Length: 161
Image 1 (tube, helix red, strand yellow):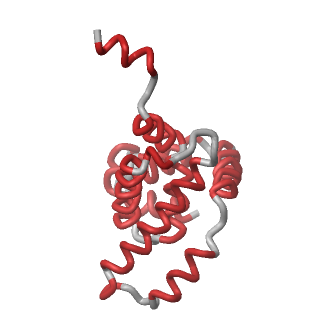
Image 2 (spheres, rainbow, N blue to C red):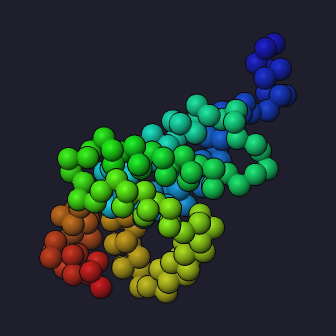
């Protein structure tokens, strides 16, 4: 009986923002990657952002710009990550803060993503497959070479073009 009642009520605020996060993950990831060059650190920041967004779900106002809200949280998580890994940073904290303030808006990331999708669509299917394997599946050059019947060097050359 309580399950039926819950189904009629709709998603909880936490479920709602988690769904919005999944729908906007590419834009949020691009925002983080603009600030966090290390792929593994960017993935960590994305996960921390998701957890924080989930915890703060009740403070998000449905109907407002979710991507901007989530990217604001991501910005703070990037700064937190830089502070925690201070010994590995080349830039000062002031420089990092200045850089994060000049990051393009999430909307511009969506525009760039759409333009990139159009460019990728114009590539030959073999190159599209290489890009998909590298950036979506995160395969190494050796894994891609084996799967596609190429040498690792040929894969690296193709990706560098």
